[in-house]
Length: 276
Image (tube, helix red, strand yellow):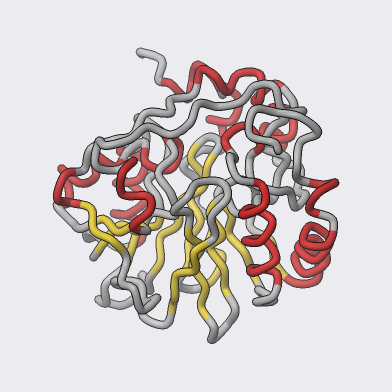
């Protein structure tokens, strides 16, 4: 069988890829190699559901399988926290299969309509093997043409009643997180993560620790800090992040508080192309 991108760079993480975890009755986390996507909606009802992010390249079959298992129908929409390669890897295939609208922050649209590429990864930030491999990660934008739309300016999220989107830039200019006030559930994207994403060992074993956004792709550290402070102030009860195992309760509260207070020492690299 031909090796895919993720098999080449993350061979051991494929062992648990595609095994979904029900975080809440209407929130499923699906890990795909190094990244998580979310399926949001009630599987037992006929109401609409939404896919948040679109995983690694060549992961569309696993996403289709999970969607069929949990819902048996296509989503109402696809919401993007941002457009890095590991969050839009299967997006073009899914749009062709489902023909559903995609929504993202307006500042992210240039990277989703073929008008701009992301800045290249920075392998000089302090980190581990994933950081050293990061120059091999794609930074090119994709072109969704008229399938992608800006999120509503009023903060509502299409297909996700009760949720609101929050602009959490830093990792990318148009990065967003999703929050539901009723139960304080948070889908954080890469605003912060629950694994030290720069370390291949910690990615493989999924050692839990709250960390800042992946260092090798983060370009605005002041904005990243402000975004973490903004999310910590919401006091989330449970968080699904773009990387790492979902976290809840006191461990989440304590870890996120520490990150907000000590962001400079915990998250910001000592040196790097985007460190000022």
